[in-house]
Amino acid sequence: MDPSRALAGSRMRGIEKTLIRRMHDLADPSCIDLGLGELRFPTPRPILDHVRENLDGWKLGYTPNEGYAELRGLIAEKSRVPVTADRICVTVGAQEALLAVLMVVVDRGDEVLVPDPGFPAYPSLVRMAGGEPKSYPLRREHGFRLKADDVLAGIGERTKAVILNSPNNPTGAVYEEAELKKLADGLRAAPVLAISDEVYKEIAFGAPPPSIASFSDRCAVIDSFSKSFCLTGWRIGWCAVPAELVGPLASFHQLAVTCAPAISQRAAIQALRGAADADRARNVAELKARRDFAAACLRRHSDLGFVLPEGAFYLFVDVAPKRAGFGGSLDIALKLLAEDKVVTIPGVAFGSGGEGWLRLSFASEPETLEEGIRRIGRRLAGRQA
Ligand code: PLP
Image (cartoon, rainbow, N blue to C red; front, side, top):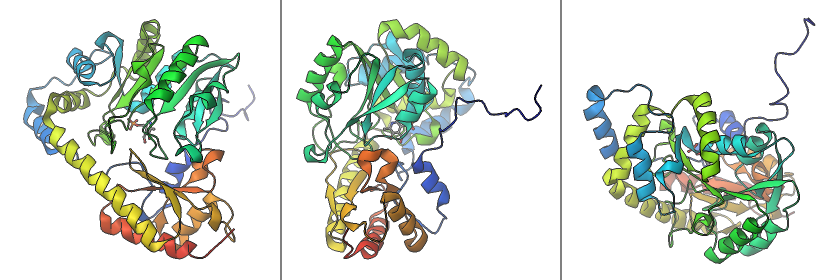
């Protein structure tokens, strides 16, 4: 055998950690962090108390592969989207749910449509599953909301699925019901599977975000307890899939992870029993106040344009007019990190449609937000492309 043969196979060639993580890895503790997509609120006290009080009595062995029946039942009952317990698989965060669905749907060479700008994991996960990501635009002139025609125009012979994400990371846009209905009709005719990533659906500042699952059963819903209940590190999410995918998805999930952590499933059950509803409502109200505060800070400390987000906890800020002397959004973000000690995420991390933008998380405390935005405004003051 060739002794110089590489250990790494080709599957992960060209696939790296997302730029979001890499920006974070570059930061030191003295930095103001407007980067990572994580709430700063603690895990709700009623969930922690419940876990603490019951820990000794629980058997924390393997759970059924698809998750505790009680949890799947509660997810079906409490979810605003029409999903049934027999179609639900409890996963290790939404991240595993996304990979699992793609692994069972995508054949080598299939295309999957992904949003641009969009969550950077999508194209990489599609590639890991053997497919080819093809982007569809989310346009600034529509407030970055999805237009069904922009998605349908991208569908070709090889298109197997389309990934949707509302409320959206990185723009905070919430899609309109009429466009989702129109898209559902178009996808049914194609036929193409909708993969609807709804991890931010509880963090919306207006009416509850509509879901394409209300208009189509050719749809996989992806969701998670990470953002809704501040359970990021507990790694607990779920997906609900069409009947045909239940078996293959269960096999993939069993072989990959066996089951989601038992203790996290217990915490999720308690969350869905309503224990943390008051915390969640308070957190969403607080995030809305922080959004408005961050927007006011941007107006006060800078002349940067932005689109006011309707959900999630990100402000997408237009730095295109400021590129002179910098280069692209990555150069701007690196400069802000090195010289001003502020972590931001360059828009190009979300695809070429994000170039010229920076994503700022407004999950931080108001004083931190203001100081971070003040530094950004100072760095970019007066520069014109
Ligand atoms: N989908 C989107 C759009 C996200 O922003 C994230 C995390 O930031 C995820 C999925 C992954 O969530 P989880 O922590 O449940 O794996």
